[in-house]
Length: 211
Length: 211
DNA sequence: AAAATTCTTGACCGAATGGTCAGGGTGCAT
DNA sequence: ATGCACCCTGACCATTCGGTCAAGAATTTT
Image 1 (cartoon, rainbow over the protein chains, first blue to last red):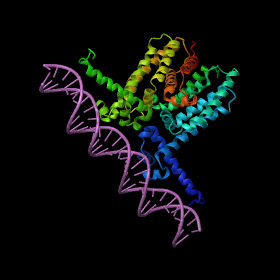
Image 2: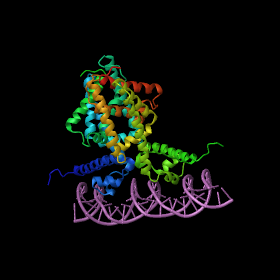
Image 3: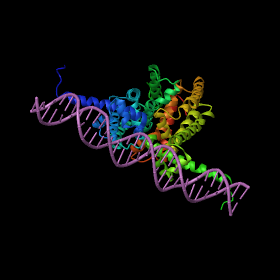
Image 4: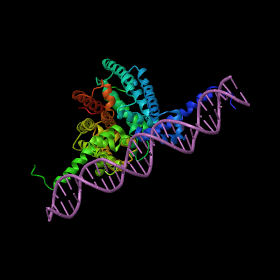
């Protein structure tokens, strides 16, 4: 039917199927943990026979590795919010905003990441030691520069970053608890706005930045 | 040998053995997750035959339930820091301090709790809906009273609590990541003091409380 | 159109897991 | 000393899991 039934088709189709499996895997890994997840559950979630999943991803660990890797990429992308800022109000504010947005749109991914780190990062330890260390060091320097410029209080940049990570990811990782405490209802749009504003306000004021 | 070889002995011995198993289980559940943990691993960690573990805890789920329940108790105990305070500086400050201390001394427990909530709290949902909801509501009222008394900024008490939970527990749940970012060394005593002070300072200043 | 490549899948396998149980050991009360 | 209740554990079992495979279905290339 389509004139573009060309050699690319097959590659595209493969990629599409991989994406379907990866999404299903992200969901199941988040819900069940690595040990609790089974290839059968993932296959069911992807609506495919188990053997077919194994055709695209040879082992459970290989599939898990790609899921975690994908999240790490998303995470790094949000980190870009930092780059284009010339002051803490904008830089840190946008970063918090970006991370809150990820918690809202990719909660399963956040949980997989949390689970991986909590269990000692057996799969992505090398990423932590290279990419994450570099990124963190560079951000610390940027924050230190802001401090020296008198744009914010002389707090520990490292612990500030931890606080931002912890608080923003909490809305994904502990989403179930938050929902339970919210009369068993997921946060509405308006409630998300309040959450974002609260987090930004407390942290920015806490480090001496006026908005 | 001991004169107190009395009728109590047997009960004590039972309790002692249960504690050994519970500690081993907490460690293994934290490291491997519920699905990844095996009764054999727990038995090995407790230095007991697997069948003996099953003698004290009939099923894996029963053992897990008690581990999670224990953490919840610790958690509630720390919440007491709130009670005896007549202002946010003392109340919230002490609460942060207490939660940081738990993260330091019971990291495995914190991880088990996080894992349980992340997977939808299949075991302790009832605790969340009753005890935790009540505790949270009562704390929110206390904070609201402080706000009305002009002792702190009019922020959302709910999101403040989430931030405190997230940040303090982060030091346990993401301890591995923090260690990796700390030149692969666990936080020293001095570094822990910096962490505690940083968290307290940013949050307290962030909500308009002067220390 | 036919050869070659890639996909698809039901059936199957060895290994591991949660849990059981029978039979023996240990310590306490009488 | 003897009976009794609790404690211990090696051997065992049914089930489930990750992963394999062979044979066929689709699709692309020649």
